[in-house]
Amino acid sequence: NKASFQVNNGRVGFFSRNSHDLIEIESCLISEPRINALLPALRKLAATTKLPLQKITVQLGFPEPKLLVNLSLSEAQPLDRVVKDFCDQLAQEGSQCLVTVTKHPHRAGRLAYGSVDARLPINLCGLDLQIAADTFFQVNFQMAEQLFLALEREVAADRADTVLELYGGVGVIALLAA
Image (cartoon, rainbow, N blue to C red):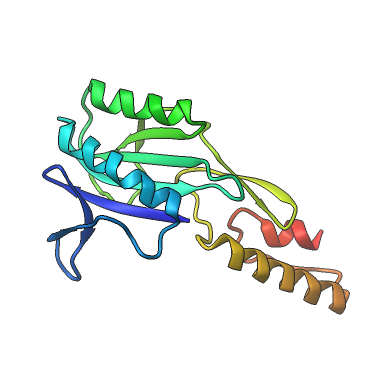
């Protein structure tokens, strides 16, 4: 599961439709409980840091509920103790934290803190995958697994010699067809 929260004036939530008006949230009805459990810490972080925090993206591993949190800043600044403590706490729990800088919150940013090798472990269809913070992947892992397994059955039944994965993603379809 993945959630992207907007940050404005120390508040965390989602933008209202067709605007930049922030609607604060206590929880998200379609997010996994582990992401919702992190929301109080995210709100505290946003309210206390002096950094220009603009967006927080949280990804959840599968089947292990490890987190990969990306804190996106609108401009580069030295990290404050609030952000460092937050990232250290995540690391102690076996999760990872990145801080990136971007003028455009919908684009991947330049890494300012954390490991360029940060990856989220995901196991689908018996395949061990590693997903980076800026990698697109289906957010509903259970449905993705059902889809990939159905596709694998169809390819096996058709006995195809060649399978083209035209949208590569992380290569799950090609790996299953191999």
